[in-house]
Length: 304
View 1 (spheres, one colour):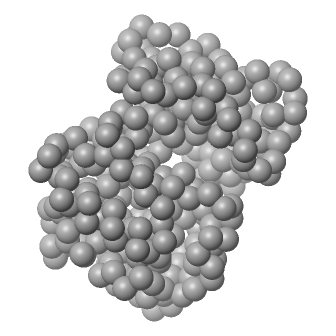
View 2: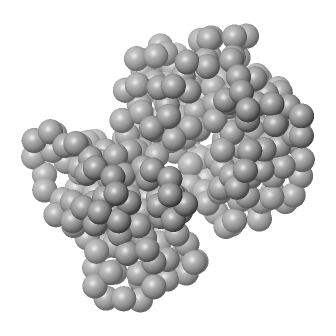
């Protein structure tokens, strides 16, 4: 199977490196400067699960040849520009972005039936181009097809990822794929970023824990309205109970580094979905306001 990975950052770099090490025909698609670094020096991965290794995937700034699958691992804010680097029509497209709104963008760019629902649970970062650090022992990719025509391509992609040592679950519902992660990620990102504290302290501080649980409960209500009937606050809270005390969020790290946080992509998408169904999310809205003030960015636009 031939696989392209758009965006070799923490997520995309980890996936591309694992696939290359397993012998998959993989090519990474990145900005010119990043593609040059990977082509010259390779992709160095330091993973608590997969070990340390140097991968040597092909690296290009523009993908023109055919591929069986495209894995999209950019940030939502950079998706539109990154898609200009794709000059081919893959059989299936697996997005591993945070939030919800990227699905509509991808279904407009590619054949809608080819776009899978996808999510990844991982704590990984790219300290510099061509270097990926995977720092905690959880890693899981979820995917689901919305059209029978995508099933064969999805199954082949699942096999390639599994062979590369990347755990995969194929679920029967696209809303479940998207919301089962989002309810947990949104609460973690909002609380760690609003208070600039790690998960252990948030869990141990009653008023901060109340915000964590409130954000989960509100997002679960929105997820159920969106068709993810089995998202459950108790399950999401239990997942965060099992996580290590030093767990933070990419949004928190982005703010600390002076980068623009994914405030619109993560809680913004939850609040827009809530507005579609006439639901209120007071905890999430309050945390979003705190984060926007801390980071000096606008509050996400929400049509009501």
